[in-house]
Length: 640
Ligand code: COA
Image (cartoon, rainbow, N blue to C red; front, top):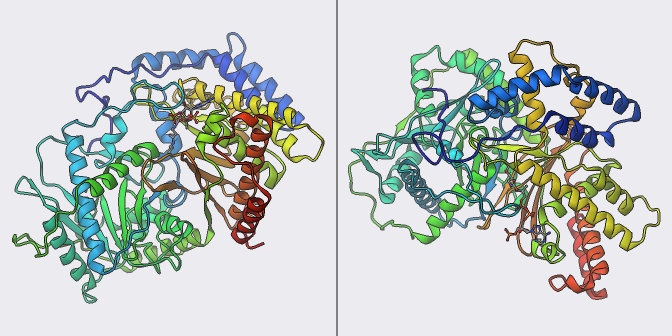
């Protein structure tokens, strides 16, 4: 498989008509870097950094040299930061994919009355995948246009074409994102079905024809029967793919010594996607438990081995109706995953199941079980990987919360950006929990540009800090003053958002300067060895807006051991928050964070209503009775 290098998105021949990602001016980035970090550092740290940054940016200095090289790189490449970013964000990261890197989408709870119902659901879903794949293959997917801030510009579509064609190959030092070329003609194609930790090849194009839903169901039934056979059961090799990337690359080398294993790996690496037929697992099927099941499968005792984490799309269908998708993140962003998933769910609603009562009459060859030759060495590796997965499972502290007091319409009525408002609420929540603000990451799409992925909105602005202090520190600040501070924090956040989505963010630029110095074999510039740079990249709050138009939500884990991952989904009258952290960190607690978040959202909502009484038509002021009720719900929620 060739390394993923396709240039185009909209136009298969290359050149998608989108502008190239701009390169910000060196001075602008350095000034903004100082502004972003000043209030997150001690005075001494800041003074040291100020000096280092000044030296770096001095006329005729190293910064200017690197900037010139980046300008040349921009002239020669479709997107000057793309490879640097991909390696830095994903492929160089040695952490295990589940929880640490792979986000999940959680579907609405399904009610399967009998085991066959879950297979019908799976067959219907796979039909949707094949339908979507043919849209992709014929390049018939309509171009996305930006919504929200600076709406209306076309967006790069390249990420969509990687959904079913890529694979993340583990490497000793760096992974590789590989891709198959897709073709308009239906060629032999297959899906891998995981069932009871066994892997089966389900051919979905036979004799140049895509399998119909009825045939898919028949094949899935055969798979379930085959998986049930105790004598033929093989070890849960999928567990190996849940390990750290270095460890998995080493285990993969051991597996590859046997030709049987090589053949099986090859089938997995070339499949369209993995469909995981899971056993019922969660004790209580609330949103939080379903999110956990999607993120890590519940460990070896549950469905942890029924996965193959290198494959971008893993559709999970639990016998208990707990369903969703877990995705390998390097080929595409959550927004693209949501678009595809929404298509599948809408397809299932809009095109009623085409199953007839009788089973398929066609004589299809039985799906093939993938064989593994397992030496004692492999058994040992499996057991080590299983232990690590178990630790990850025990460590993840997740809380999904639906905030129903108001949603984005209320915020819009107050003439504020809902996204900025939610970001300020997250700053307030962190400050209330921990008494300080920290480096924060918010993903900002740069799909307005060729091969555009994301940059970072640094939401911990000085203006946000002033506001959260005023809301928390107990010193008297009048409501109009607080409102003024909120507006100023929102304005700063919105300005940064526009900066980032127009390609003028600082994170990609700093990364580019760092990496081009490495390419030039120049000693690492001091600015990147500085403590401030380390702090700036330690994203204790890692946040992302992933909105949906279908009932479902996205979630992911934290990116640092003492941090939070916060994925939110703003809807017109409510907001879904998925907050994650690690139990092993004594500093964090997802429940506590959610508690502070909800409290802050109440306070901010009240502040808006008090200061702008004319704009509150969407959110009734709390009557005493309602207040008591809210408090009761609140206490119940946190078992106070
Ligand atoms: N007054 C009234 N309405 C306002 C407003 C204001 N001052 N400011 C914004 N709005 C409206 C917008 O017009 C928009 O309206 P719409 O719902 O009719 O489209 C709505 O509020 C939402 O806008 P906003 O909250 O400002 O955010 P956004 O939709 O522009 O999103 C980002 C901002 C940063 C999240 C978005 O640009 C982005 O990059 N998204 C991708 C994130 C991503 O990649 N996530 C996945 C990572 S894996």
